[in-house]
Amino acid sequence: MIDSAAKSAGPASQTLSRGIRILEILADAPDPLAIDDVARRLEVHRSIAYRLVRTLEDHGLITRDGAGRVSLGARMAALAAGVAHDLQAEALPELTRLASELRMTCFLAVRDRDECVTLSSVEPRAAVASVAQRPGSRHPILVGAPGKAILSVLAPNDWPAGVASELHAAVSDAATRGFATSHDEVIPSLCSVAVPLVVRGQGPAALAVVYLATELAPEEIATHLARSATAIREALGG
Image (cartoon, rainbow, N blue to C red; front, side, top):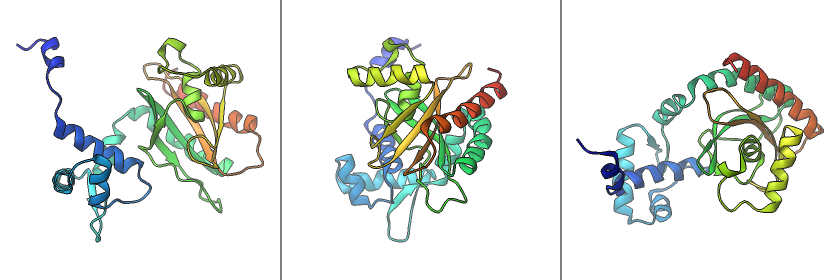
């Protein structure tokens, strides 16, 4: 029997690590990427990137278009659906309602170590223009309204290292008001409002909207978000 200390001390799989990194690269890319682009971002030879892409493609995790450019495949959506399944299932109707009411893209975000990851998102149908927020997209938790909202319900010793005093003040303000805001932080020119979502048995999450401009005050947006957060929390038993 192999003890846990020996297992943890073993070498990591470079191939597996590179394959996972490709999925992260594609999740962050706004458009499909050529193999050469993947190789450059992965910092490996094109032939290595090609073999990794072929393996991921065989498993349905990525797909290639007619020009050979790669993007995440349908199998990734099936895998993602299993992450916090109950939370996503209860959040979807609320996200859909919020997107219609506010005419903004609404999304559910969770913490993944030092990053904030979008689990689900809904774009408004009636809006003339809306902002895309792709499930699987991620950014450092220290920037953006969803990250601040999540940090506002955590003890400071659970925060990532290197938090600036300005962020301490912003998170403290979010904890007092019950919502966080951001502008020009994650994506230039975009604004966001987020409220924390704490459900028993789940890590802290956030309900958020992202938009270019609106006549609604952040406080009004936050009221809608908070109402939905309460509905989700009660549906999941607190």
